[in-house]
Image 1: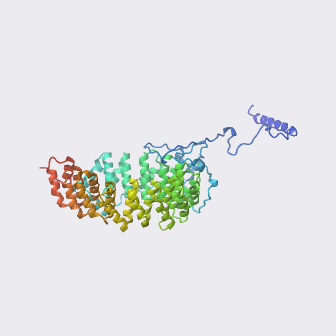
Image 2 (image 1 turned 90 degrees about the horizontal axis):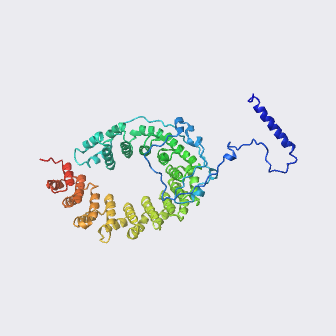
Length: 586
């Protein structure tokens, strides 16, 4: 009975209250401060005023560089993961879950201007429309399983020449089949370093049954090196649901699909971006920049409009927009770069991305930004201008950057001059080698001079080899770049090696020259190889063995057998010679 009369009673009370209010309305017409007895008005979002909480202002932390900590722990799987369907836009966490009003944004950067710059709402940003529809997240279709590609014959032949003897290849196969995880990992690292594709089938078979995460990571890295799509099925399947896998393996999968250009993974990658899991965000965005197309560029454009992104996330998004040449984000990036209240690191990546898009309209915008007082921003302006090697204003600004007071800006400008082929920069680079206070700038200038390869640059570099006043640290770098170029300076370098072989005070330079010589198969290195082997210093002999392994000088074998026969010789050296020459003990 009580339930039957509940609502009539309520409306009776309500009617009496309204009648009372109307009866006294004339007396209280001028009293606007008096509230009615009942109010049926509610806020549009269904939340009462008492439930509203004020968003606290966050205090930025100061760090030298933005970073995302790496960990090997598996990340918790979001509840929405269970409901994701193929191509269903409802899989997007962004669309289903509104940002929490009391969340604290990540402002862990050196620059504190993000407190005002990050507050800019999407309604205040330039309007960006595209006829291309944004890609959606979802479950990616897993590619069919396939065997590795056949090894490149030239690479296989070059790698075989680096084997210590004819048994080396079989030893590697046995290590892959029966070795410990640490032994297999060390071998894979060597194969990657030597650009050796001969063992793809064996590594593929081991991968299929591998339980050890380290083995998985290294084999993924191996096939990443050779851009072999044989593990696409594994990588895409894992990225569809990575939450129970180690972060190291997940990261390796992101790098793998980026190298192989696995476009089939796009829905899974977008879903991981939308999941807002910090463990995956940066790698997922970077991967999308490598495998995505116009639809993914529009996705990034729309994602940048969000107001809840951290500065680190915005940086990654902007850089990827530039890599994808997502011109849909152009106006947004210009707006960010020109906003002096914006976070400096965010502006840095905006500058780089504007250049990467290749629009000539970027040059005056970037040149103007080069007047900034912050050297970090100037450095990234140079990164952007490097994309315009035919623009006079861009070239002039890069060359002027070589004279910048801050060493990071000088370093970036020197790299830029090298990349752009700015031969007009040669006198500036020579001056930096001779006068700069920073060793890193001297060495960067040496590399740029060797790359530019003008007569003035070549003559200067050769003079650094012969000049007694030039320090050995610079000589090491000059030897490296000239031997790599193979154009000038070889005679002077071999003469310098002879000097160092006669002077034990210059062992460091002797070792450095020998290691560089050992990289190249050149008949003119026979005499210096014999001199290294004739040394009484074990490390020098070891480098002589390295030169022999690359060139297989028959004249060196008698010297090496003599070293092995000497029981007093270094045991490590003797073992290397025994294995390399396949010496059988009596």
